[in-house]
Image 1 (cartoon, rainbow, N blue to C red):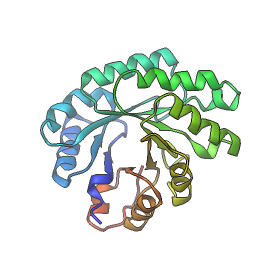
Image 2 (tube, rainbow, N blue to C red):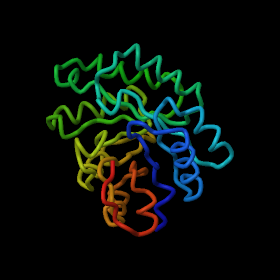
Image 3 (cartoon, rainbow, N blue to C red):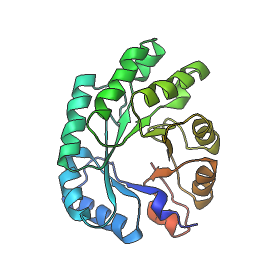
Image 4 (cartoon, rainbow, N blue to C red):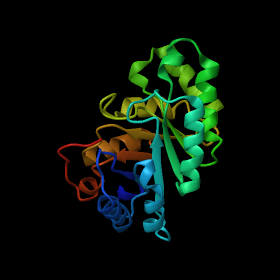
Length: 219
């Protein structure tokens, strides 16, 4: 299996330079990855570098510390990111609101980002939720217009597992897909996640994976 078309090549560490972003985007094009996932501030540059390559520009908001932005701020940032040239957007959710029973606010927070008009991947942070809350998170995210559901924002919340992916895959409908994220660092793990129902893999270890190597670290 060629893993490259499923991988969102991710670079989100602090202090990335212009040269880092250019190199990251060139790698995404060279290896044929699905997208280059980069910080929002670098979206215009990434869009320029990747123009005509077929590789999508992806970014994220309310991340890596999830659930700290206001809904109005998220909606405005989503519009700005889309206008800057992003093709896709991953978003953190208000986990605390869902755990507090604020379901309408949780859904509307996602819907405000979806209104920017580009596909939105919703990081559900499944390990932080009860079984009942997980079910509601899935339903509310789909009601809000999510294009993809993600198990978690990063490996610090959950190492992506076939169990979480298959749980999500069994619940999505109406064309909604699953993206696996968090500590994906081996070919075996990547293939197991795809077999479980993931359509995309978010990882910083993409180059190692397509070379058949196991990475030392990954987010």
